Each structure stands twice: as C-alpha cells, then as structure tokens.
Length: 543
Image (cartoon, rainbow, N blue to C red):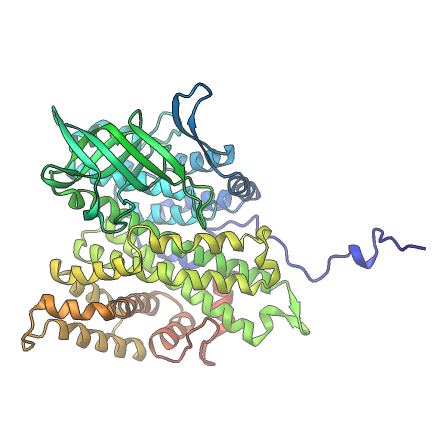
C-alpha cells in the first residue's frame, strides 16, 4: 500500500524559512542614505524620496524586474522581406521600469532643476531605483551624462537636444548612449580604427565598427572616430548607416541589450575639436563613473539588507542566525562596508553640486575604483549568508552577484581607473591636496585614521620629493606597480573620515579598526572582538 503525502502532513509543512524582503520602503529603511542626503543639502526632496523608495521596494517592481530578466532582449536585424530593421525587441516590463525612472527625472534632475543638493538627490534616486533593475540604469546614466558633455563642447547641439533629453515623458523624450571601444583596443581608444570623413557643412560620415555600443535603442550616441586631425568625438542620431550586428551574451545585466555595431556612411556631427575626442567625451565619462560608484553602493546596500532580513528569521543550531556570534560578525562587517560606500558616493555626488572641481575629479576616480572593486566580494558574502536559499534565482541574490562586476569594468576597469588616479597626480596637481584636506577634517577623532593619514601623506610626498633625481614622470611610472594599493588606501581614508565625522562610533570605530588599523581580516566576518556588532546591524536595518 503506497503512502501519499496530503495537506497537513510533514512533507507539506514549511518551517524555519524567511520571507521576501518586500514590500519595503527603501528610503525610510536606509538611515545612512537619509543622513547623507541631509548633509548634501537634499532634505527638500525627502517626501519624493520616500515615495520613490516605496515604489522601488514594492512587489510590483520586483515582478517587473523578474520579467525583464527572464525575457531577454532580442535583436531584429531584418524584416521578413530582407530590409534592415536594426531594432531591439524588449519585454514590456523593461519599458515600464525605464519609463518610471524617466518620469521621476533620474536621468535629468540636476539639469531640469539645478540648485543646492540637486546631484545628491539624484544620486539617492539612482540608488533607490537601482534596486528595481540595474540594467535599466545604464541608459538613465548615459542620458544624464551626455548633457554636460554637449553643453561644454557642442552648445548648439545641447540647445537642440536638451529639451528631449531632459523630458519626463518616455515617449517623445530622447535617450542617449555611447560607443567608444573597438575590438582591437578596448580601453585603449587611441587604437580605434573607425574613420570619420568630412563631407562639408560640418558633417562627417563614419565608417567602421564598435565592439561595445550601449544601448542600441538609444536615439542619439556619442561616438569616437579618427578624423583627419586625430581621434575625435561625434554626435550620431540612430538611423540608416548604423547597423547592429549582434547583442552581447553577458554575465549579468541581461535585461540590458549591449551590442556590436558597424557604421556604413553614418552621418555624424563633430563634438568639440578634431583631434580632441577624449577631452570632449571625458565629461560624459566622469558623470557615468559617478553612477558606477552609486550603483555599486546600491548593490552593497541590497545585499546586506537581504542578509540581515534572512538572518533574523532563520534558525540554526538552536538560535536565530542573527544571534550566532560568527554570523553577527559577518553581518556587521557587510553593514559597515555598505555604509562607507553610501557615505562616499553621496559625498562625491555633493561635489558635483558644489564648487569643488579639484576634489570632484580626483575623488570620482579614486572612489570609482575602490567601491566598484569591493562590491563583488560583498555580493558573494551576502549571498552566502542565505546559504542554499541564496544560490537559487528566486532569492534575487544570484542576479545581484552577476550584476556586481559590471561597474568595475564599465568606464575603465581596475587598472585603467587606478592609473587614471596616477595620471591625475601630474596633470591635475591640485586634486590630491583637495582630497587629503577633505580626509583631514576628521583629524584627532580616531587614532587609526590619524596614523593612516600620516602614512598616506608621507607616501604621496615621496612621489614629489625634490631630492629624488628622477623626473616626476619616472617616479610615477615606477609607482604604477603599486597603483592599486595607493588608490585603495586613499579610498579607505575618505570612507574612514566620513564615517568618523558622521556615523555612530560603533560604525566608525569598527571600520577604522578593520580596514585601516589592521585588526580585521581579508574576508568579511573578521571584525575585531571590540566591534559593537548588534548596534551596527540594528542601524543597517531596523528590526
């Protein structure tokens, strides 16, 4: 006689399981973000941020994200008669998510309503909606970043296109993208072979290819190509002559179509001067690097929130996970990393509002490298806190883990970002002093931080030692071998300073001891025994 499990039998019981972390009002649950917005003169947007946080943390948004990820984009190169289409078919949930981001002005807030705290508020919005879907934030970021580039180098194009680029209407508005890298050069854009031929009246025709073009449905693109005077930047409207060859099969951000493209006589207009293409496009890159930093901070925040939420509801070995000392160490370690990233991201965003050009340029490069480098390990540890439940797709943690490496690659991978900091030491010598002066504002409040700042000043000072007979360029070339370590130490210095000044002592003391004072280990979950883990966890996510 066979036995069949029925309702109420042990086989059907669900015990000792957590529950989904939604709905959750994401802004109200994030004390570190709220405090950073207030410090950055963004308190005026509090009500709107709470509303966006409620939407971003809703069950509806999570379902749209699931649909967009499970129904990836499809390239339609030709119609049934053989005419080129070069269109991308996207799930309706992708369009819903992108439309909501645009309606909230995340792509254009500082340009529509400039003023105190505008970039800080926009950074908070970016963090909140990145919880909805990381892929959607790529076209949002590029559209935001193209406006200052056009204002600087092509004001007539800015006047023509800015009304559409800053529109809050997804339909008649415009989305901007970029196409810089080619298969033979990657980050070495001066190796590009795409050719720009002048055809008169300030117009050019592009012939060549791009190995990465994001994202193909954009209305306009900034493109690098070789003009008669050298590498130059061009403004391109999507249309005939721009042929998409395939979509990339990527590790993460699968909802986002990234493409390879060929240009066959594509009409284009010059942005800036011929031969100064990098200078023209770097303004766009600096703003998208800010978003890489913000997006990585968001991933950390999401990961630690999911981990704490699960640990408070799952028991093992006779106690809730959150009450197990080893797990408390892991959760607190993830939490201080997340808060440090949030504080740094919003401080850098504030420099885009304020008259701080030296700090802004240097800090963006340093923190883009530092936070984007640390998010991958953070996502992996957060996933591990959920055990096998975290390894399955329904938890959302595999998506977080796959998406985490992107920001470290986009707009300059680790070496490119670190070496950009080294170059800035020479080309923009006011940057390092401005950065260190900001860090010094916490001087005297934490012995670990003070010692770290002393060592940093001595180390960077040796690069400029007049007694060294080598040229500055030679000294910096030798220092490139150690570039990552220097940039990492700079990143920890800014984060430590911000936490010492603005976070509770439980958070700042644990961070400085573990990250700067050498009393933490190489993996998360190795805080010193002095860390007030319970207080740190409760601050990160209220019970």
